[in-house]
Length: 176
Image (cartoon, rainbow, N blue to C red; front, side):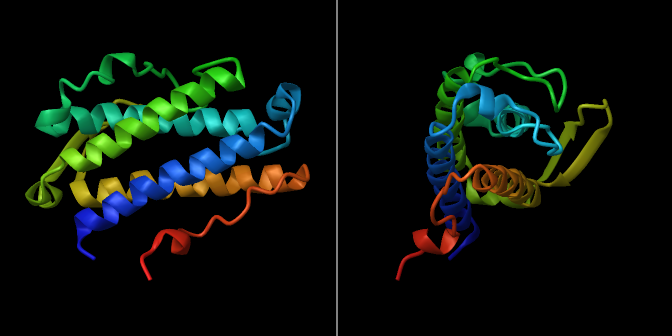
């Protein structure tokens, strides 16, 4: 499997897992999703919101780097986060609709990346205003790893509430 195939697999896995997590969340009332459970982003909702914030920040950076994404019709619909722990939305259903938008955009982004671009340096400014240059492929790998990390936290919080997300292994999407 080459790097572009890996990225497409990760984008597909990301959407699949988000569908599973959001479906599992619908088994709990909004108040339970919002309840502080002592997690890093306090609640299930807070953790999912952080994922949406992080994804939004990265996707805006990536869209400015990948020439064909700069005019993508979804780009103007992306929120403008002001902090990594701030809430983009107040309700779960608003966040769930936004998650669908993000996941579709991620798939489009991965499809738009030319293979030769993966080895290019990628420059961006952090949320603290620090300019950084990293390997583009490595940054994309971080993007997907960040999602997996926080979805793992979310599935733990759901499990503690008796909600089973089901199988979460990337292995399920690999060809036989």
